[in-house]
Image 1 (cartoon, one colour):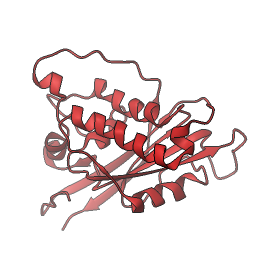
Image 2 (cartoon, rainbow, N blue to C red):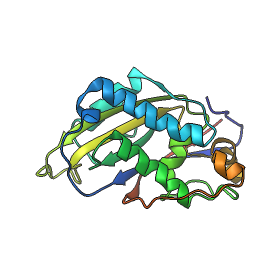
Image 3 (cartoon, helix red, strand yellow):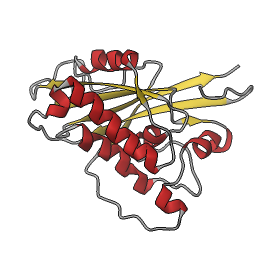
Image 4 (cartoon, rainbow, N blue to C red):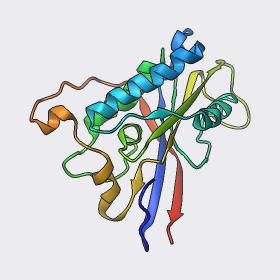
Length: 210
């Protein structure tokens, strides 16, 4: 778990990824075994790349994610976990890649804490996080109602524990938990892809540590 320090204020911020298009069914969404394996494979690919240990699948997190995804509410659950959301991607790998691609906008040399442009990435590779669980729902195009914005297409929800994107004094937790990639650490130049995604900050949780 994350270290709690007396007299500090910690901010946990969660973000969502949007790709405004619907796509056909993929085995990575419709087959539970493929779904879990694809989440772990692609998540841990990025964690290896940025010097973080593998995450393990957590059924409690997956249940929470699945229950939140099913109504297709396009907002954060407000639960106790770190949370990434995405909609409209062809498969799990593409959705996680969109989160990982945000690394191109992250300042590894002088971390400035949470950013709407990099929040999915930093949660994805957060070193103190150990567990992940995800859920998915196929949301119809006519899903709008009076409760506000609804997800359209495949709606992916991933929960993480312990939470990432924790801001302490002088961005200390980002410095400790978000590392440069292996190639960056050895002076190699990486080619960055262009990600077609939009990030929105939908929830801020303030935790005052005693």
